[in-house]
Image 1 (cartoon, rainbow, N blue to C red):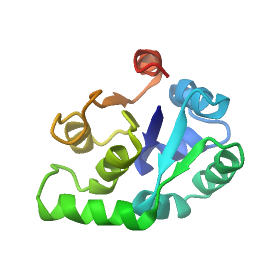
Image 2 (cartoon, one colour; image 1 turned 30 degrees about the vertical axis):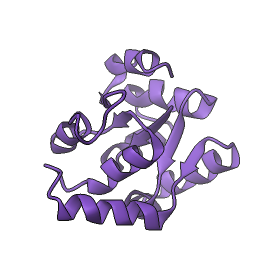
Image 3 (cartoon, rainbow, N blue to C red; image 1 turned 90 degrees about the horizontal axis):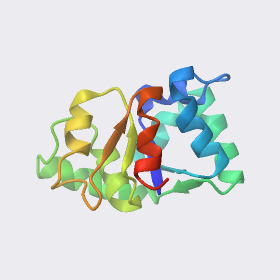
Image 4 (cartoon, helix red, strand yellow; image 1 turned 135 degrees about the horizontal axis):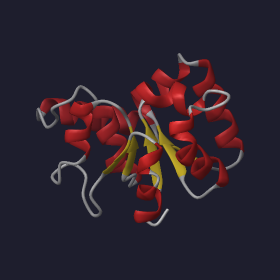
Length: 144
């Protein structure tokens, strides 16, 4: 199952070495237990962060990156904005979850947590939030 790493956590996740709190998710992504889903605005945000750009290249080469069509992500993001469906300003992350099936999110954005756990936006299974190493069990709980 894919996971999403929000831009606010990508430097902690993809730095060298990664922040210890994010080691379980880093190991899961780079070992192939989890794939990283990305596209649209999130991909553009990653492009501004050196460690994230490097990680995307490595993951793409290893076949562990789901790079979604940017036009589809951007279109769905605009639909979510038009419907005023989200509490956060991260409609692109919800669009990625809906298009990729990602149900695990690494983020410290509490408004985005609310959206990601909103049954009407992310369901079957419901979205889970990873914030620190104590959440490593979420990786197993989702069958990852």
